[in-house]
Image (cartoon, rainbow, N blue to C red; front, side, top):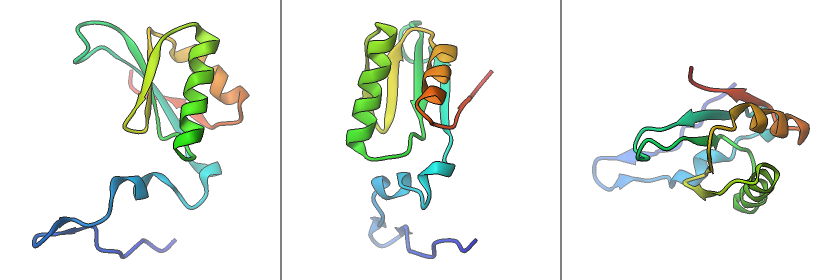
Length: 108
């Protein structure tokens, strides 16, 4: 499997490649969505974070909306991550697998 040999950083001009290029893999069917529960930096409140979701921004927004509607919870989409209020890791894993995504639980 050949690696990309494009320049991504230069000491003369800084970051060359934008962050949005790194999220679109060659085959999105092989990418794995990760789901974890977080409390750090959120005032002690629990949230469930989903990242590494294949597809573009519109697919990410529609998936986030469907997950929030299914759970009856609030949340947002920031920095290519879906953030859902509350601890819903197991439910989201089942939802993503029903939708045909490869999803794994991350963290402890």
